[in-house]
Amino acid sequence: GAVVSQHPSWVICKSGTSVKIECRSLDFQATTMFWYRQFPKQSLMLMATSNEGSKATYEQGVEKDKFLINHASLTLSTLTVTSAHPEDSSFYICSAPYRDRGVSPLHFGNGTRLTVT
Amino acid sequence: AQSVTQPDIHITVSEGASLELRCNYSYGATPYLFWYVQSPGQGLQLLLKYFSGDTLVQGIKGFEAEFKRSQSSFNLRKPSVHWSDAAEYFCAVGPSSGGSYIPTFGRGTSLIVHP
Image 1 (tube, rainbow over the protein chains, first blue to last red):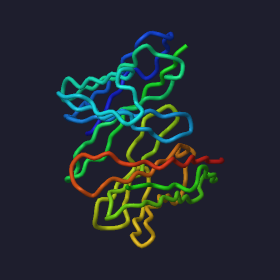
Image 2 (cartoon, helix red, strand yellow):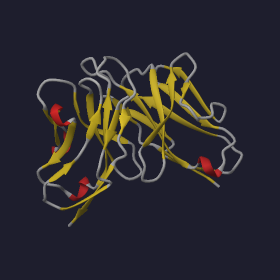
Image 3 (tube, chains in turn green, brown):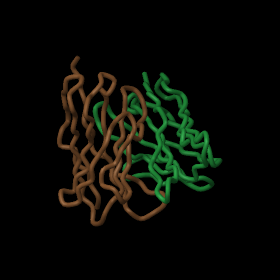
């Protein structure tokens, strides 16, 4: 159990275009999902917390108008990078907590490599 | 505030040798502790977790970790490393209150395995 599917695994887009990344919990419901960004050889940076049926909570310094998050159902959250620029190129990973004996470790998608040209 | 320190950026071992990756945490109470592994270009996979009870925790792929409260440590070990274990390893700490939470990750340790 606790499978998180992320799509696409990689995407190349031109500057100024928008890109949507999907994150699905396949065998459990996730009222909360987390979106991370990872720079090469670095740890995970939490960008935002996606909440089903309500607005996402963004971490300090993350532009909510650039990184649009929608969590329309209990199994799907999407991250849209709007008007992408080369500096948005990065590895984006989603995760969802899966309750296990009262605690909820995070389970991660396989990530999306975004390259903006 | 909670924090995690992984003092080793890189660790190099020979295949078949034993492995220990260090993790120290800072937290006011007994935390929940996790080790994740990340293969290149992939997401993170949960190796093992500590909630309470036995301080020696067994995980997948032959890994184990030991919680030592006196040293605020949760080191990851494997008795015999395989070439496929080469990856990035992240230690994470979460608050001991129940329910969903946001863990804090260490910066990661890159494991290099020589044949």
